[in-house]
Image (cartoon, rainbow, N blue to C red; front, side, top):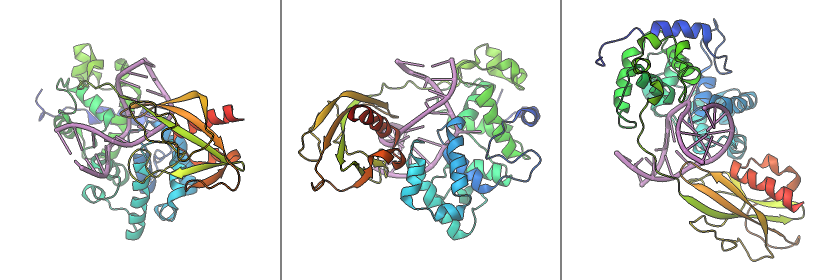
Length: 348
DNA sequence: AAGCCGGGGCT
DNA sequence: AGCCCAGGCTT
């Protein structure tokens, strides 16, 4: 079927959504007024490449502590980064704060897709989602769920990412003028609960009678994706430096991997285990008989662990001396939190 | 256009 | 043990 022939998708999908919508904390209650744009924006940024179940506790924590753009704009960088710790993609947290401050300075968040697109951390998907969900505008909202649903509906055989322009055109062809926000969220709920990646539950889907992918008998083969390269293996060492029941934490550079986050000191990471080569200073290091393994987006990391206790008067690199008993409150990214647990077990 | 950027859930 | 995810920014 050519792209310019509309299908009756929106009406049955919205009917299904009215009966089966997920009850999520950033959504307005059924029958209520439009949702709070602050909550829509915050949830959309947290949900970038992050699943709903992971976001919910962070969303509750953030909205309780910072209930508005103004409140968030007044937060300090360090406390916001610590609150974001564990959620990943830390550039989102830096952009979140920059965006809140810009919105607070303008006294309100813009309502058009084009204006939203100019704010930090808001790209094409998020601008469309906020315009549709918070402000009821017709916008073509394409995320990974929509890509999966649409490539199945139309049995799109061309591979991602090259086929994205056509997916957008197909999504445009089924997006209604009214209730565009509900339509977008309905597509996401469908993609999350019915039109799932591995084993879609087609017989529970309100659209299976109109789905070319269902008709092929193998809907799970869509979307077609380009082959992925294997992740390289890299190695590093983390250093636990204790002085007077406190441990040395440093701040990672603002940009790059885990940028702007508190961390344990590390040497450079490379293709071979560096041992103590990158130690921050000479000391009586104890190499622990343990390793920490962690997967990042584009490489896997094996970390060796080294510990030293130094006397109270000893000079050491710049950083924060954090109470060992309270180190879990430092807001460390997960790879460092893993290492801290191992140090705590083997150092005690 | 391609690479960089986390972490956890699911199968 | 992979695959996946309510993507955006930088180069």
